[in-house]
Image 1 (tube, one colour):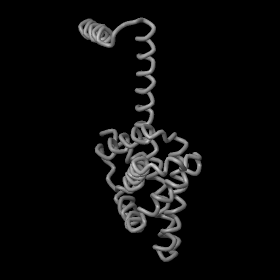
Image 2 (cartoon, helix red, strand yellow; image 1 turned 180 degrees about the vertical axis):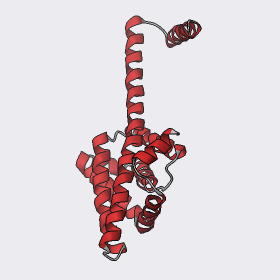
Image 3 (cartoon, rainbow, N blue to C red; image 1 turned 60 degrees about the vertical axis):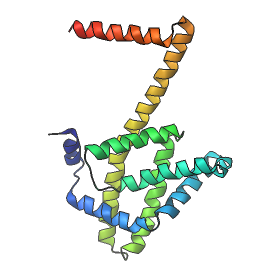
Length: 193
C-alpha cells in the first residue's frame, strides 16, 4: 500500500469528505479574494509590518501564497501530486518569512471564516454543518503535516547553507574544492557498500 493510501486510511478520508470539501470550496469561491485580503491584513497587523503592504510586489506575493494555501487546502484530491504541492507551499511560506505559528493562526482564522460562510450557506442545517466542519478539520490536520514538512525542508536547507558558508569562511576552502571533496567522499562510500 502506498504511503498516501496509508495516510488516507489512517485519517478515514473518504469520497464523502472529498464531496464536502467541494461544497466548502463552492461556498468560498465567490468570497476567496475578500477572505485572502482579510487574512493578509490580519497577519500584517499581527506582525506590525503595515509598511510592507504599501509594497505592491510584496502584497501580490503574499496574497498569491495565501490564495494557494487556502484554495489548495480545499482541493479534494489526496494523492502524491497533492502532497508535493502542499510541501512546496510550506517552502513558499518559509520563503516569505511566515513562521509556522503564522500558519496555525491562519488556520484558526480561516476555520472561523468558513464556519460563518457554512452557517449561512447551508441554511443552518446542524447535521450538515457538523459533517462539513468535521471534514474541514481532517483536511486541516492532513495539510499541516505536508506544509510543515515542506517548511522544515526549507529551514533545514537554509541552516545547512549557513553552516557551509561558515565552514568555507573559516577553512578558506573554495566552494569548488568543497564540492569536489564531498563528491569524492560520496563516491568512496558508494563503492564500499
